[in-house]
Image (cartoon, rainbow, N blue to C red; front, side):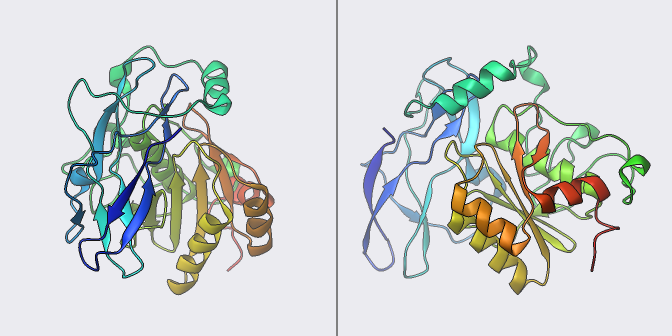
Length: 281
């Protein structure tokens, strides 16, 4: 079972129950940071890309990965970081999941662990395989929208960590024709937000399916910014989330371990086939 601890808001002193989210390791086992009940909860005043991530070692295979640092939002509006136990020998915790194991069996892990693409906070990432902390996705030339035959094939990156999932989603947005891909200014209730000119996207690297609330919050954010929206998930979508996305016209994609987004509803299939320039205004 995932670890759950009481967290007291440093601003209003209200106590919230927090459960550490789990993320899939490349071996298929769920990994969650170990919460430190004796640590100090700190409010998030200024965001720094590097501070949003914590290194966690998988208890099953020993592989270390970068995962989102646990945070909890209070009803008073303050977002706080939940303290975790850190160190090179600290293994993350997580419950069993058949979905992660099956995915690992379908898609073997790449042999070269050093070939993964991290999302970094400074400098450009070679070969266009990363996202900078506040700028565009670096890389090759502009991607031409239009018919699928007019575009080069999408080149994915293997997904070993949550950072890789964000990188794969950012590269796919660029391949679709969106420009200026960056970290979203507004943090979503769960997952990681990306934004580009005319679009906001949610990347959910958790081992549980994306929920109805995830889809509705993404759609509402897009409405307030007069933008399109789309969602990427590693574990798929709940039934009610799929139904609401179809009703709202939100494209849903599933990221497999090769880093290739797979359309799971009609709006996603149309977007994947045509890119952005042929979409109806």
